[in-house]
Amino acid sequence: MATERCDEGLPGRDGKQAVAREDIEPAFRSSGPCLRTDVLTGQQIVVAECRSQRPVTLTHSTAAPPADDDPFMEGRETLTPGETLALRAADSKPNEPGWLLRVVPNQYPAAESSVVIPSERRETSEVFSSRSVRGIHEVVVECPDYRSRLSDLTIGEVARILYAWQRRVRTLAAFPWVKAISVFRNEGMGAGASLPHCHPQILATDFIGNRIARLISRAQQSREETGRCIVGQWLSSELSCDQRVLRQGRHFATVCPFASRFPWQCRIVPLAVSRFDLLSAEQIRSLAAELHSATSAVQAVAGDVAHNVILTLPPTTTPEAFWWHLDLLPRPSRMAGFEFATGVDILAVSPETAVAQMREHLPAVPRLCDTDALCPDGFAWLADVTGG
Image 1 (cartoon, helix red, strand yellow):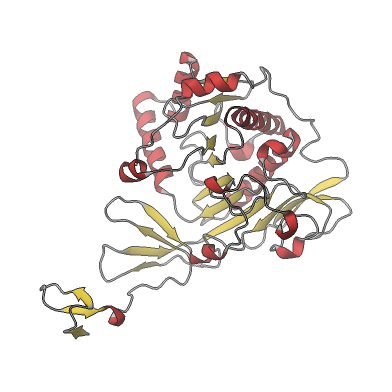
Image 2 (spheres, one colour):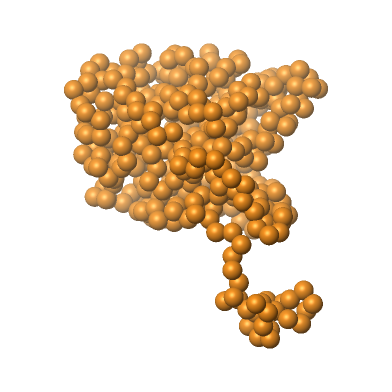
């Protein structure tokens, strides 16, 4: 394939000949989502070109777009794949009106369960490694009507959302090939949302991402040196110093971390060793109250700022690796050059200042929802666990 058209091609190894660009045959073609690793930084990326086909109705405007094209509203169930879990009226049928919450497969998944055996596929050079990704990607439709903000939901609705997360985490973790489960919620265009209707996502994968791997490594080192989980050790230190504790309840503490990534970041952590998939109904209700309170406090201080909610879970095979925790990450500004160049975030509001600001808008005692909020009278949770 060598050619003398050096001015139009790529330089050859001898610096004299080149390969014409149009003659280059890619050594690797992705037929589906695949995992790639950058040789310089070790950064992992998932290539999922179908994600580019997602409908995007959000803009940088503060006004919410009209609900005319909202595929998640009640009565438009045919616009989504069939539900895997739903809280429905007892006399309603799957994939029809009559629901309070639905979980459905993502139409534009970052990973697919159809890959039977994730094969390792590499290019001719070991520098460019890539392998197929197996996963299950779901969307949690939080409410049947058109609402776009977590703060617009009741505490009872937030509790139902967390309960749906718990049920799906428990179900997905049972698949033997699933190694990690990510649960996240994007609110606002600045936080990565493409549609305004409240909809967290759950993504179970056959690989463990670098962030979780680093956390596992640090947690293992902490256990070897102190005999304690790194998350529990961090929380104990924060509670002792009491400079960044937003609130401490019966089951959870909400803290603005010492090294927060974003202004007004809040981390909700269990006060005792626990597993998210085994939380009691009372603990779910308490967690919902803490998340709702923190979100409302952030909104009171920072306005309708875009944010992410991230549930960090240990790998499915080693649930004791570290304590799970829930982060609320406001996104008042975009990442800029220094952050991308160094991997170091610049924080414009210290966590100490954030706590002082938010405490003024936080009730001293969290307000719990009713005990029947997880499943109101006349409703039932219906699950279809097939397709994994």
